[in-house]
Length: 466
Ligand code: C2O
Ligand code: CU
Ligand code: CU
Image 1: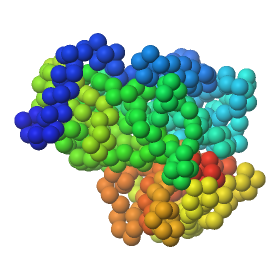
Image 2: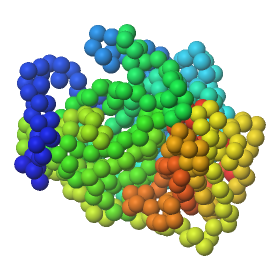
Image 3: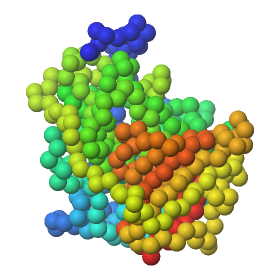
Image 4: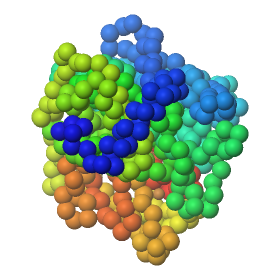
């Protein structure tokens, strides 16, 4: 494998990229992949962590010479990586420096309802919110973002999103890349639409209202088509689809294989070799890419379908690459026999009428009552095919406060990379997905479509765990 096996078109793509680099190395250099920094833990005590998160206005030059108004956490755009250990007692000081309310939701974290940061935990302008919780779930790549009723799409779009890593004994012991920004690389992928003056207004056209916002420019960690320099070794990419509505089919320009090692809620049992990875909005995946057969000077393009997302340049010989472990962790499968309650969630409707079980979000209505620690089976279906071609919309279904197991997709076993912990699952038009979940935290939580325009239109419900 390697560049020798490239098809004609693909090798052209690589070559033209190389020429561009030699001709215009300055612009290329300026376009290095930004790496969100690890956020400082203010509490030196072992087993405790405390973080400051400031929600603020920003300005960022996405396009050279044009300043864009943005939102960010502790910076102009996106947020730092919050990294904690399993077992940690975590406190976060969220300070809202905006003129409008916001919330900060910990997507994928299993914490009590009042710490979840959903639409009920509003942080008003010039006030702060101090959630605290104990990390009681395996190593995973999670994320945080606003969740204000009817405003999630706009606030995320303008830049409010960040990664939240949990590490544990297994993630530390596995022979995988662990150096943040060097061989363990966060990639927050989003699509935007810039206006002529470089602004990034959140303006929905008719198509956006129907299917969710679709941009024409892809950003990685806030940069357009950036470049990442690495050694020729195994590289770990932690991908977050942080887009409002777009799904991606990630692959490499030379069609090289890679291994998925983690899904939304943590490591898979075994690494899975693949050539293409689909990620719906809010889904995460960790993949290992083995560049050891490449030589210094080689360049690989990460693509969505045939479209370039970013470039990876091999710039240095590696001296000690990690491996691609085959077996990763044990995941104890839930026993379907132990299911206490089965619930159905039918997603339907179009545009502003999208609904779950024919209902739209009502802050004062609790849709489902659950018992703590009971195993439930949820049957999630997408009825939009019934609306005719126009209405056919995929709906990525997300549940707060839990990591679940997907047991069936359209009556058969789900693909291997959906057989680990998940908190968001894509349900295409006409599909039915069955999941098993055990809710270990009390309180009020949300379930919703993670196409943010659908969520904001009311495609969300509430469940109370007691
Ligand atoms: Cu990513 Cu309800 O959220
Ligand atoms: Cu969530
Ligand atoms: Cu939807």
